[in-house]
Length: 109
Image (tube, rainbow, N blue to C red; front, side, top):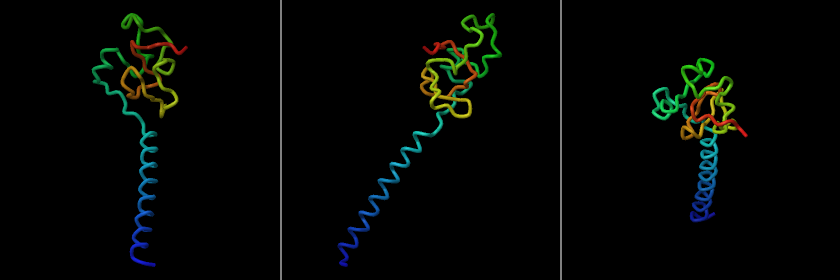
């Protein structure tokens, strides 16, 4: 085998491994959990987000209706839920608690 053929084979093997590694890396990043909505997030505060809707009262938050929680909202991406949290469209895809609530609540159709 000549040096040129050997170098070419090494290059092709290296290139194939690199492409496979990039594909795997992008697949893994797609499965990475969305960052959770921070307690001091301005959008969360503006929409009155709470981690536990059971702690809300209709007198303190007139828009709240008993039984309405993030997991029942059309903006909550239950397909990507992990450990009780899933991305929410109201918060740019940041993860919110399934038991949470905010003023952007929209019942699932």
